[in-house]
Length: 470
Image 1: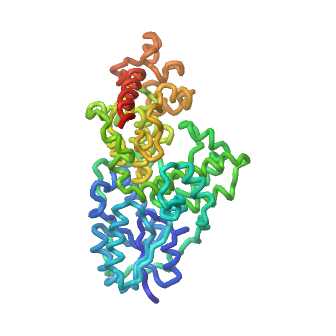
Image 2: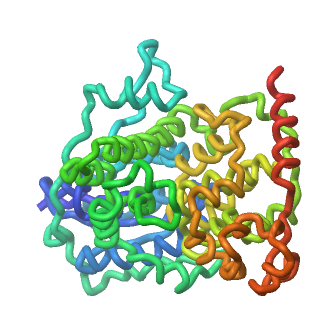
Image 3: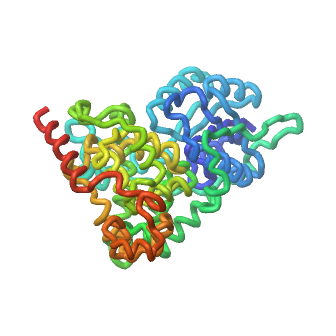
């Protein structure tokens, strides 16, 4: 039988994998993964992502009956060698949408044009080039993109494909040497990350099923509360491809909650993910350049000490510190808090959104070039469909509203666990006897606030006002 290499990338699953499925109909499959350390340049994986990948490849190899072959290096060099080594008829893969990957894959297609080369959509509900305005230009605002472009589109999302059995994979030969690829990290996240996650395709399905059973029925309201269970936490699975958006969409629509608003809102959140990839495809400078060029003149402040306090969850604002500490410990942060801590960095502290983007990239296990850069441009106000410049999340009221009992905050900021709810999000207002009873010494056991909320808000608004005339 003919042999075909399936080059796995951000699609590390056996179920609903178009490249694997099509290859299984053609002949024997040689599944491979290549850690590309050549083409990403400044977008090489961060520490948390590398740790996740290391464990995910181990899990995937088990699912593949130990028949996954892994490599490290330049795919442009590696793929021709593998075609020759395995006498393969061609290579199949599922498409990626990062600019550097698009350029690389185009070169590979040209280089291997004499072989059977085929690519598929495995990670988006709608291809970015399928959804355009009537004048054939891309949308820049989410609502018309989603409601006018996606929902009525003739390109309706397909149903998930069946699982491909490892029985169709090429057996390894005794002489083959294919050790696990060497993955080194700047930060050794170690056991602190793995204790919070079941990494792999099975874990992704468990997270999705748990969300459908426990979180979907009250999603529209409950999703904003970081201490609850109304978020799916499958962003990591969508990023790595242990779940596909087609599987997620199909699953939630097959188990609709009693109130349609919860299903509709969750589907729109999947739409936001699509929109991020859409923006990255049509505006490939999204990770580096302001989409609104007037922000090139914004007076950002570069302060390493301030940035470090934000990174380590030492700002003196409990809800901000809780979010930053959760991310550093688990590789994940609740979406509401991503907005809160992001707003605090770029608006209250006036640090450049690039600094936040880079820290999230290194710390998040779901660090996704499209979602990360689009999210930071949104919160900074410089993106395509950005939050208004005057929308500045108040770190005190956000905590009081979305963590009223302090369950989440006390978990991640245990120094304040004995502080009454009345003062939990503004400990500097607590009387001295209340602080003493809670064993808190501001400036020693917990930081004093890094800025004044009112003064930093006024400073930000003044800076933003200067851009209005540009």
